[in-house]
Length: 288
Image (tube, rainbow, N blue to C red; front, side, top):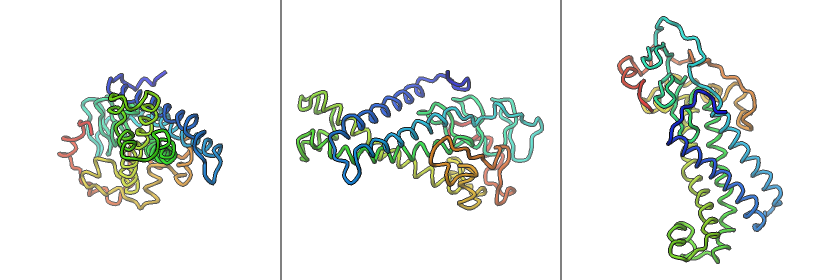
């Protein structure tokens, strides 16, 4: 059963469904079709199958933890008196702490909100940013891993590397419509293209968000140039990945408590924060 905090949204549901179908399709394609026909090189095919399954389990595990970990203020008792740096959220009818923003899709304030992830159907914030970043890491690495093997497989299926096979690989839908590819080869090239797109798109997102984690910034704070929460790269990693940040990346179920409860944060200069009351009032209710 889905958590009650999730609100049914057509775009989110479509994105999530596409992600799950794509992940399962590419994984089964690599394990049962590509690997049996490709030489594993220095390592055995069995090793690559096990290692690929490890990557796949991390992708799904981090996705599940990202979705089930609640970063909202729903279960937090918030003070009735407005504290310095806090603001009143008219939608939630409650006071919200610094770095907290209201999400119109989730219809709740999110602690240290970064953005709403349509593929996970939830917001990324204080308690699940770790899983989001590691989801991007394993997805981009897995896509690259699959792409390397696919290059040997696809060119063999398409009859060798040539201008025709390259075009058919990049534009499989057009070539199948023109009758140059059968349905089976079309499916192979489409799944291979999904891996390539994963490398190009997801790796870019991973680098972008890793830069923010290292500086202890949210997307909004990066856009506004807020650097007051930068405590040094080690402390910054702990702020997102927890006290066991050095091993938290290995598997999503490694317990790594966060140093902050989301109501207050360590800062280099809490009196010199760049987002003043005017900026907060203009931006808090936006979907970032």
